[in-house]
Length: 256
Image (tube, rainbow, N blue to C red; front, side, top):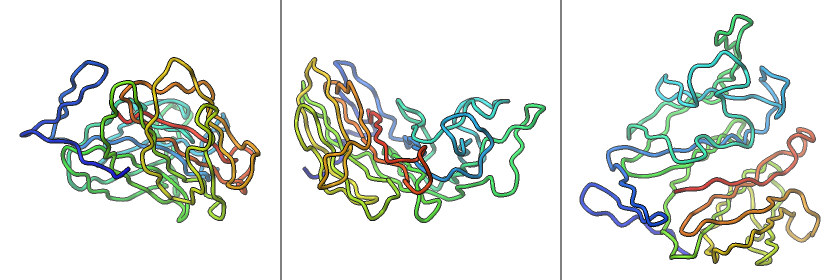
């Protein structure tokens, strides 16, 4: 299925979402961040999930929660998305993005040290558009920005796209559904598979990650139940050589 732009009317976008209407402000950009950088260092906490938790700054302002006094709170951890739902609203145009290890001193103040700024880049976001920004590997770190450009599924349907950011770059992966069989196949590193449409039912599903050509489960998402007219991004992440806490995994987030 080809990607389709939202239908626009004057200066606003109107979405039919579970029989409610949301006015999308065309004067802002809407953004999510997902942390799939597999490195274990630099780190400021030994609490699982291991590896750096980041404070995300946009143009110098912290956006992932209020200012915190703990290395474990209000910072994005490995494998997670912020915000999970809905989006951050940012000013369109050039935005400076910094991901800094959430290092907190014994007195409860933010105290980054040399090397703690792991991402320092600039991304241009267009007004009225939605984006997913992945903090990824290779080059280490890398940033992958995707526009969340999709059509709204019909009633009693939902759709799914897949992004492979597992830094075992020589491997390709399949996603198996207990209900639908193989739904994505032969997915390479930093490859994005286009949206697949599925029927929404009351039955939950189990999605399993395997290497292409094998049947050994590497990771599973259990009891997944797609919401009618929702759109999801599933993402593969991890890096086997880093250790057991970074083995290939599978997760998802909603896009509307």
